[in-house]
Length: 346
Ligand SMILES: [Zn+2]
Image (cartoon, rainbow, N blue to C red; front, side, top):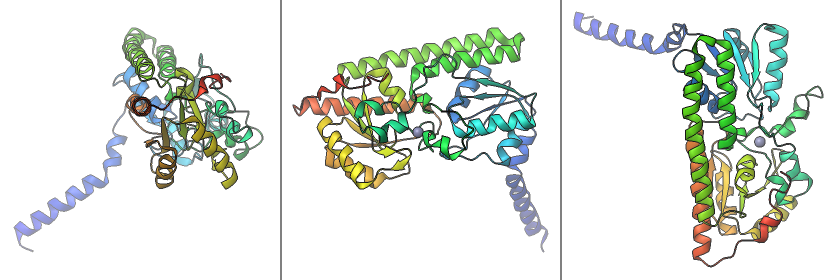
């Protein structure tokens, strides 16, 4: 081999090796670790903790929170963590909690849902009553969205688990604000020397969330969307629907596709409600969602159940709903008398 060729080959090999060892760069990150369940929580913790900690989300982006089975990788991530911040609403979080108690009894575990009014039975309700109002609770794909719904989760993960709530917490800017305050408190307990910084960053984030909450509320009010219906393949927008007086009608039952008969019944309800928009889990059932939306005279939009930029995703949902309401108003359609039945369970 000529020297020049040899040098080029050596350089290429070195680059390949460097790329392959990306993982080892992480190994060199010696910051203390905070473990969280989802990407959306990771965003909040990073905003409040600054660069001081490495934040690890146990649920891989895009995976279904409600179907996720925590493997060895998850337990390995916890091995190095100083604290695990959980929402305790998902079956996998309960499993992880049990394993922590068995394997890492000294690891701190803090529930970020303290102060949040958790919706129950939202995923079940869809199948139990078929009544639109009930659905507002839950089944989402939320944090990532098609999750494996938790509601069904209970059965999946054994009789030992207790009833879990709607896991799509982060579809609500108000819930996110509470989560942020809980994160600041947990970090301050972990590292009291930096408490003032954590609370300052938390206040900035809370102000941003509060501003977006007000904007969301006014956009929905001005567009005439309040009291209107949205159709969701999976009930991932239950908290959003509760916060803003929107009626959520899910087409799924306990995280499974509805039977043809159930689907027919719900589509009849949906048609009566003149839905403002239809939401489906990004990457799933897109064609079916678009066909259903067309038959209902509305538009289909993807939502991510477990992904980054949760604030941006909530804003996208708002704009889609407001657009539907504006178009309906322009077309002279009257909104259904849904406000009478919407969200009565909350
Ligand atoms: Zn769900």
